[in-house]
Amino acid sequence: MRSLARPLPVAAAIGLVAQMLFSWRLTVPHQLVFDEVHYVPAARILSGLIGPTNIEHPLLGKTLIAASMRLFGDDPLGWRAASTLAGTAVVVGVFAILWLGLGRLRTATIGALLTLLNFTVFVQARIAMLDGFMAAFVVTGLATFLWSMRAETTGAAWRRWIAGGVLLGLAVGTKWTALPYLALVGAGFLWLRRGRPDRWAGLPALPALVVLGAASTLTYAATFWPAFLYTNDPMTLARLIPFQLDMYRQQTQVLPPHTYQSAWYSWPFDYRPIWYLYERADDAQRGILLLGNPVVMWGGLVAVIAGLWAGGRDRAVAPGLAALLWIASVAMWAVIPKSLGFYYYYYLSSIWLAVALAAVVDHWRRRLTYWDEGLLLAAAVLFVHFFPILAATALSGPGAFHRWTWFASWI
Image (tube, rainbow, N blue to C red; front, side, top):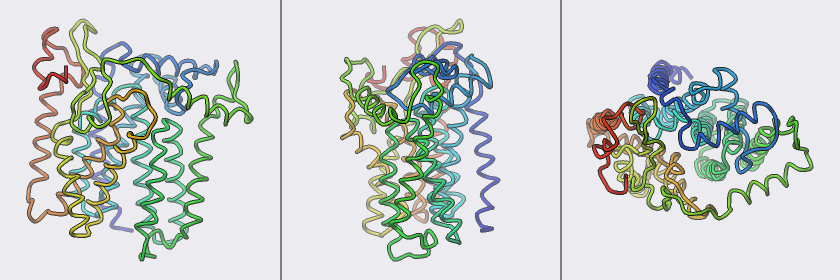
């Protein structure tokens, strides 16, 4: 396992850069932004164990925001600090997925840096919303399952497998939209171990799937523990399952039209981003636009097609699986019973595009020499260009947004 130790300094360095970038000027603006108006008040109530609130989502994401507020204070730093850690976990988790999947430091580094420079990751790492935590648990969970696949002993494989199940249980305990990833892990496990008893150190298929389900389910149930301590209307074991039905009804209710609603099939094209903020705040005009970095978002679509080609023609596992992971992450929204769709639902899928780009360039690395560096440079240039409306810096005036809105749908 010495080979696994070599990337650790690089991963740590990337993680440190990510944490510093996400944390810089984190408290600007000094007001609630977008869906923080829902989750910060819910975290306050949860912190005081007062009673049920914001019941359409599980508790864990709001619990983490509450813990951050307990540690740093009920102010912008406290609201958002935990989200920066989640963003850093996403970046380092992508590094781990690519390293464990391909074993090449260059590829893992490129994928992690493309993730870091993707606008969606930067913006979600600096706002008190649930999606950042859910993504962090899913990404690190998938990395842990790959780590389990590389285990040299059955005991190590089981420990890592269970840890992966716990992480996915935490993801579902943040937002239910993480639930399909349990099925994806199970399907991937059965497919990857065909004819390869060395993978997962020979874990038997049926017991492994049962343990996966048990570990994730028990972890999910444990995330409701604070609700059992409420002063008003506390949770009971008898009510825990009926409460899930209440959550389902809340999540599937028909909502009125919204200015920033968009259809799931439009998300891959960066068609309808969301202005989380565009107003005077902290004595200046400021904006925060949830938009994907075009290099990653549009280049990633090409990578998905190329990954499918490589998987079909060359039997290349990594680019093929990366492409299928992205496809599955988008396709699930065609069946999830939501009355309205929003671009931030695409957050996890945008992360998989960086994985697909890195895996595809790695597959054709002899033909695509320096393409990865070119993609990274282009992504960095756009990150610098769009930075003022990603980080809520002071703008010249109310009409300043025209400098960055390439299309009418971005307004």
